[in-house]
Image (cartoon, rainbow, N blue to C red; front, side):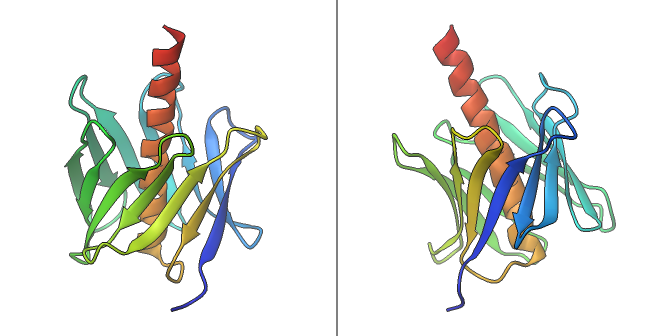
Length: 166
């Protein structure tokens, strides 16, 4: 087993709601929400781009469309506890689960129920937003899973804040 790769999530100063993914001090990907009130974002890792949207009122659906060839489109229904399953282009199945109650972590698991990606959101400080641990080498599909998982985690946190405020 290789050493895990640690990706830091930094809130960018360039845009109101943009998150930069840093590996060894270099930006390897980012997630940009162009509109603060819409659950939609543009994700980019290297020269690859995806549009991620959350649809639905009671039953949320995550729609991901690739901006390059092959123009893949994924639709995944979210469970009410944040559970979601996605099959990648290389025909591998991954499941996103929320772990913990007070100190929530989001975990991508493969078909053998091994943790592949772990996302941990921070509350403080305001610029350093979280840490992602990749248990395998950092390849494009794991970075893609990290971007999708971060989008889902941010949407869930915003929903929880809105429910607590009302």
